[in-house]
Length: 286
Image 1 (cartoon, rainbow, N blue to C red):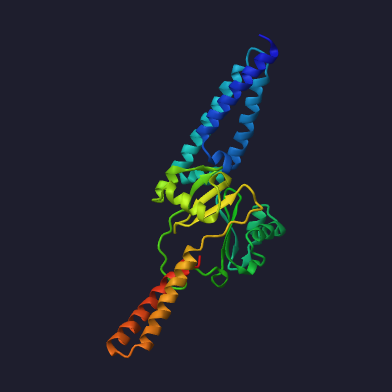
Image 2 (image 1 turned 180 degrees about the vertical axis):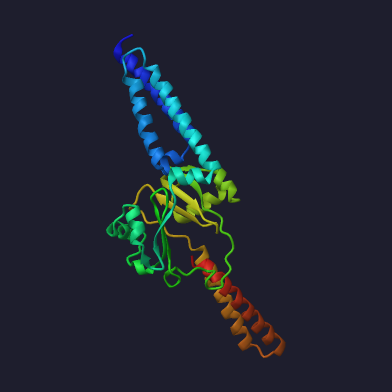
């Protein structure tokens, strides 16, 4: 067999083996590499290159070595799942870098991290003052996670005493000009509804790059042509406006009527509607 054909076949074999081994090792091998996984990734890549390019008769030994490396990696991963001691030994422990707004210099030295590098990581999280940090910890993966002091945290509905119901995740219903029927059905909608919404926007479905429906049944579209401006959905704003108009009408009716019972009824309805508006307004203003 000619050398170029042999190398081509071995390269295809190496790609197939490497793909299977990587799938076995899982997504963490790609997204959050530990020190050992980093070494494993480099070694597996080198072995795959050896398998595809080595011209002697012992190239299959590279496959055996590759299998051993992957086997050891899988064994270590299972050991880490079962034992915290093994996780701490292999991956290391989280280390506190900032506590109560004070930088812990000794811990920075242990992580071989300078103050400039720490501040750079904080700035990436939109934090420009270390004193605003209640707690900062470096994870075994090398990522720095931060908890701001109470006065510097963003207000949430819970902080304001507002109860907010669970919100359904947005669904992609159009992609590359094609309708996605399954997500559409998941939202309890159909193609007829979609055609009506697109017609109201004045948009043809084949011109839609991406279309999403949010938890309130509002359709948002992104077109292939970025020069075309598409009006944003106004259902929530329209609903809020209608509720406030109804409240104003009830107050007007209570002032205009001379019947005591009717006046009382209109006033009570207006107050009840005002309470409802106060509860739903944070949702409708999103």
